[in-house]
Length: 269
Image: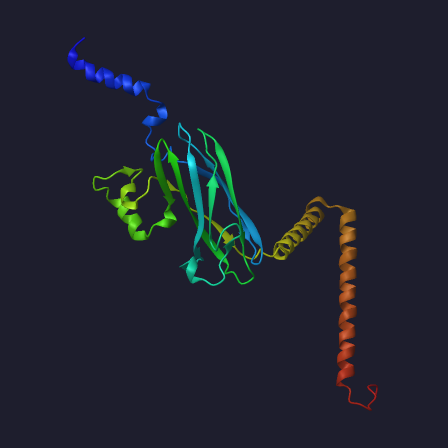
């Protein structure tokens, strides 16, 4: 064997002996913990709702000593947006303090999943709109402590700098993680607070649509198909309506005459 090939052979044997998870890039977008299956509520002011999602370990080794922080950080409507600290009576996380909560996660083996759920409470005066939620996760993997955050933890300037210039630093998925000071990017999420849409206009519209549809069908059958019984019933109904209208008009004219006649005079004179 060529002595010059010995170092390369030893390196290859060492790599083969190492477990697969020791060779992973823990910041790869397809490897970082998967936050998915979000259940985001629409909460009526004064009531509460469940906000939940799942966390799946996509590494080849276990995740240990993990914590996950959930925080409501922004409110927005079509007209404006504000940080959560700049609105009055914002939603509260029942399990935590104010708008935040930190959960301790169990150790997760490869491809294992755990569920995370919080209760969000509101009051009658909580502003209606969309509320944005950010996530932060810290854990140990392969002897390294890792920190991952969602988009809501960074200012617009920080995000623009990290996504437009790598400057020779570590960039994953087009994002310079070194500039952001994290080991991965998690997803943001949101929920809404709003009054339910009243259903009676829709019910009225459906009712009118059905009525006019049935009327159109009756007219079609009368004119095109010539159903004699249907015509007879229709004309009888039409005659009753006309008769009722004439009687109503007569009563109205009578009332007008009575109102115009001065007191003490006989209308027949």
